[in-house]
Length: 176
Length: 176
Picture 1 (spheres, one colour):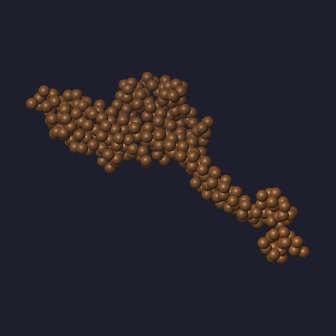
Picture 2 (tube, chains in turn orange, red; picture 1 turned 90 degrees about the vertical axis):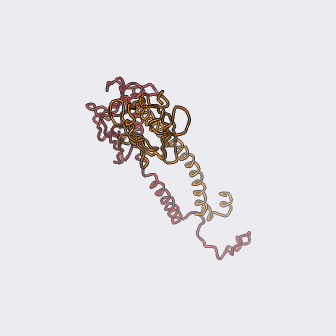
């Protein structure tokens, strides 16, 4: 192009505005492509970090729930105060009331936030064998399912919590 | 006259062509620079929060180290925690129930002591800390903090980030 320009005479040398703009446009495309790669890599990294956090928060709450349930007093059926799909409230071995409740996207333990961003939560009260729910007074285990989400990431955890001591008449522990 | 050049194959009559040179004029350059200036202004606008990146990274890392001490505490019967000293801009995750006995970093095995305000955290400082040397953050065997509170970090641009430890459950939150 420069050679062509030069052939046209001294008065026609140099680039025109249009040529420079085209060059700028092309380099912009190149830069945009490179930037997209960078942003994608950063996003992937951020999502992985976020996922790790969600798993950590969820696992910690599930572990705490299992430890709490293990300490269910269970001397009388009155030790289970409330047992629904979203709430489990009971008296533990020390006589303290423990209250796990899911409401408005937050899982709380004794009214203190335990996990944020809980999009789904359910508790099922099950006998020693089988998957059909039973009244809490006849349960042997609690299946917990929790989904924690943030942005595009979502983690679902499932676990079983087993009360250690259930003295009231109970199908799973030699009761009638 | 320019009749000779017109006869060389140019489309336009020679008389219609202005006698000015074909290279970039000052006006064209100014226009180009204005366009480039506007484009980079737009780019700079979208990157305005890039200055706070060290602050956000420092806050996330502090939160991760708190969670790490918390997880270890759950498996080591409540002997781990963290001290964040605003006077020295340093935080330390500890073990063995001794606030001056640093944990090993899980990846490098180096002592888990982080000093802000230098290297990748230049400009970041500890504004306030509820977990100073006289009141360390300690976790019990359930991962619950013995005392709740916040650590506020400040960035180079004047923005702040707050790492909050929720009482009772030990949920660690990072916010503005």
